[in-house]
Image (tube, rainbow, N blue to C red; front, top):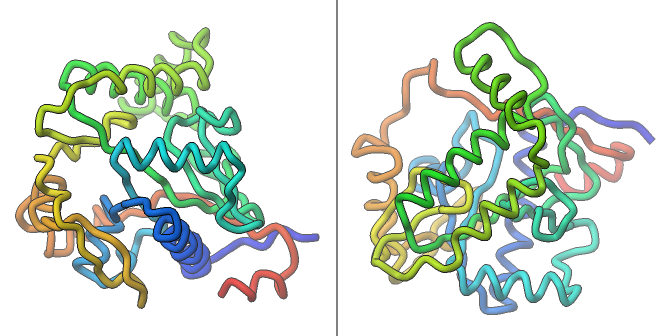
Length: 266
């Protein structure tokens, strides 16, 4: 059995395969999700992946997210070669739920990671104070996962965080982040409080969800996706950024097995 280094094109196809199965699972179990972040931008601007991007992001409201966890805890699988990972399931060190391909492995931020995955974010009521607290601990979490440092200001900051918070386990940080969120009352503003991404939007952005093409398939998107994208990426989101900003996540993906098995996915 050999580990085969995957090209970006192959990585994208496996990520798309996971998304297709996730979509089927959600429709079967009456779960509402949305394409978000670069995946939504890719659907609108490119009808697929952003050319230099290779990951997939979706999000759910808290009620659907909790229903999804009930299904996971009951042993309801998506497909035999796919697995759920998160700190809540105690099989990964991040709070963000991931659906990963078990026949792959990745090197992410310099460390071995899980297989190629789809991130499933949760949309919660927004609270600015808790958002800032979670964002601080998110930065600590990222720093503790970092293994390669240089002399840049950003890298030195990560190293200091890693040293100062060496006593705090990754799993504990992840669980604390999730625990702060659940008691926030509805106030008309929604965001990804769990991983503190700057996608703070009015709740009406997600009303009347529709479907949009992504790599030849139809997936769910927020009804007011234009308002969402303007808030997250600015009013010029349809324009390509300068080449210096066209960066991938730097993830190295490998297939665990033989090439014949890999070709079934491609």
